[in-house]
Image (cartoon, rainbow, N blue to C red):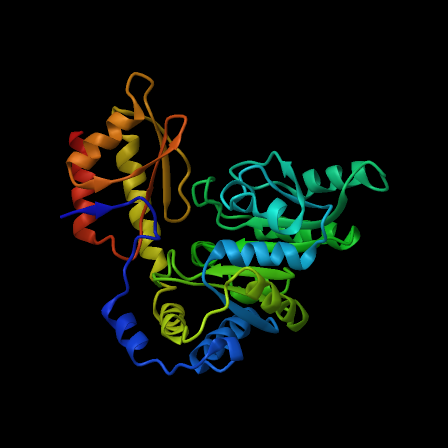
Length: 340
């Protein structure tokens, strides 16, 4: 038995999802003629109480489209120093939008409204600074170990944005993990953000796809940018059907992934080769091995037991629970860690 805990992107469609995909009605989405894509877009927009949505092949493309919607070349985006839009999207903000990124020194990928306000106030009216246009936050935070933002803090950030004419984008690649973990609702987020990206191929278990949600005006602009970036697809309803199935069947079960992640974290805390385990709120487990061993050695020991995990550098290792990580697999990983 091979166990892959590298990411929640390693899942394969369930039998029910495959059946939904095979039965999908499709058309040419470039001509807005794929009924299943239209259904998915309308479904997610309604869930969040927003006007419209657009299907993308990847979360990176959806995020980069959002940045381009809200900015012009020479503008500035504010985000956390660990933000995915800055660290893991190939410098897209600079390449595609000509935008500079002001990195905020937050905690586990999350900054405060006070930090944002202080930075914006210090730059207001300066001819030496790029025009401030956009704030981007990520929930849950990837490098922050699946940490969830305080919604009250998000509301405070929205207030700062309103006061300073800043757009607010949410990289919600794993937003449903936060919603389930904190007992929140999609509508809460739809009322606060100008645009939201949602990934279907992480915790929700679809094979491909992300969605960008926003106003009708924003989505009309996004349609043009998606075409420019090469993201327009044809009979993509087969993939959209997987997204619909995921939204209908795989949201509430995220709580199972969270529980299993916490079990892994507790087991790691009792492992003599582990120095520390970061707080676990959702499905991501980040831990540090002790100084006397090499992180690659720990990875090799796990690989020898048929368990794949990933390094994040600087002694940090990561495990991510997901749809295809079963109770039997959990028991095996726990036993392996205890005996490692």
